[in-house]
Image (spheres, rainbow, N blue to C red):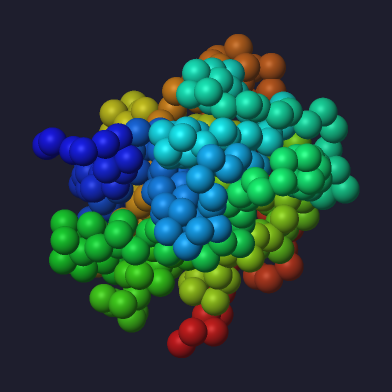
Length: 342
């Protein structure tokens, strides 16, 4: 496959059927978004930056400033610097050394906030970001949490799935900025209005009404604020996993399916695997796996780190507990939601 540029390599990621276990009934297909150059958010960075250049919002040579602790940072760094722009990434101490090294090697300037704000690390990062916007007149802020080009970037992902599978009955996707789940779901609903959408979050994330726990260990999903790009109206069901359960699922994904991934993918894997035991054999379930495991080498895949954090037994229940609205959850639980779009 010959491509004109590295940016053209973004997208068209593999769709792989998982083998699961003898409890599985429905078919589960993993969309390996980790096979993009740096991860799933490469799609978002490509869409946002190319669209901003097309409209003139991103001026030639203007700096780009974004807030991220993971894959969006790498996507903006990849596309932004490739197009000749100076890129500034605002992050926090949770950024892993692998991601930090990638960003610096790509020529980014990385700004690390030192203390949480009133709404956790996210608010502290956004405060510094706006200071940088004042200091760098003409700079472009991709605004991944609210920019409609974030969810719009996943129209192509949905089309790839339809081309590969013919139809999708259930989408299982992690939620952080909301773009991937919302955009992919809305696009897939064009082909199947009865699509079931299952959101995967972490305990201690506020996205679906849980109290904030800013010291949660998981990265890549969850949030201390509810991003405007999260479309709650399309979600049929939300699952929450705690740190130990997410870590356990991630390790099992590597061992059982040979997919070396991050905890977003691990949590999605656990949920999709359970869902497959609840449906008929003809149902096609898609599990979106956002990123590779390299940024978690020193945490999830490190026994010493897990021991230090008290994650020793790696307990993962065989099934989640169903809860009602306003229940504060501490372990794998799920809640059925009322969709306003039906």
